[in-house]
Length: 431
Image 1 (cartoon, rainbow, N blue to C red):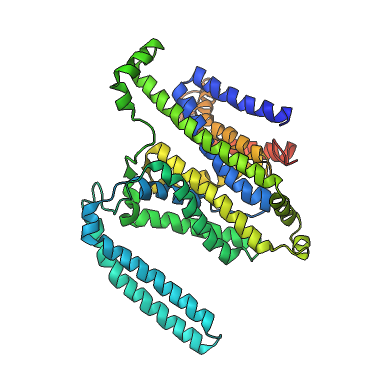
Image 2: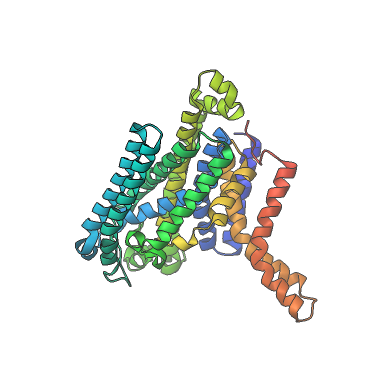
């Protein structure tokens, strides 16, 4: 690790500590926890782009699948919904999957021509009609069960920590589907495919209430750490908090966030170590060779498409794990909050600013950019208050003060331009 790397990480740590001293430790720990999650997302994208040159603009969809995993794994099953139509709904989904598999099998067996086209059309139409006939009444029955608080099937009722690897598996499955479709084509086709699939995933989460309540959101997802109210009612914890000079409410909030910090930091360290081991192994050298010159690598006998699929799945799985972790931290799944600006563009800025192709660079970018994302708006409001102080009250002053909300976007653009101008390979460039 170079002195520059140590200095930059210490600088980010100092910024977070100053946030705790000057604002509040709750805000500082929130930045730290979300910085850890953002660093994992950046690590996933850096695996794809920095190590293999794969242009993925569908990070949002993989993160959302991780959030869905937290619901499907940890939420208790809604017995009334299962009794009303849960089994029928699952059977309808299996029929739909079977119809797709039949169409694929027929197209592989028959030669191109009118017979294959006609058979494919008949099977697709009949399969879709049968699927909708079975699915629609079962879905309506499930969503009609107490829609104000449930209206969905629920999950498996397992510990929420199991949702983190499951989120990675769901994202890896979606990445396999996308990769098998688009990785053999040009990079711009991959970008279109990832963007389209991510929007489809978000649309499904918003509209299929039986799955995760749609835009009504799933709240109260079980947590791997104690609840603040339970700590506040624990005499031992109250006594310990008083000994530190803290009231029980503040102490419980800080304690819970520190527990999340420990869990998230453990996952990040494990992923960084595994990524570095893979990068320094022959596999990592092969991936960089493919990234730098696909034609030369293929001429040396490397299966470029297969290796691209491999690393695309791995990077997407890391993003899925981060998505499950973020939903666990929030204790709720809100599909409406998954926006490309936050969960695709911002992650790309983290990787570019931190250093594409450098594992620690992506981690640094995750912390630094999320810190700016949170702090720029209040700091911008303070700056505008000072700048507009001499101005008389009126439309101009009001407009300038209301523009503080846009400081985030302006700052992200300025930071990106400055880094690209003075350090094109990022703050921690690939060695």
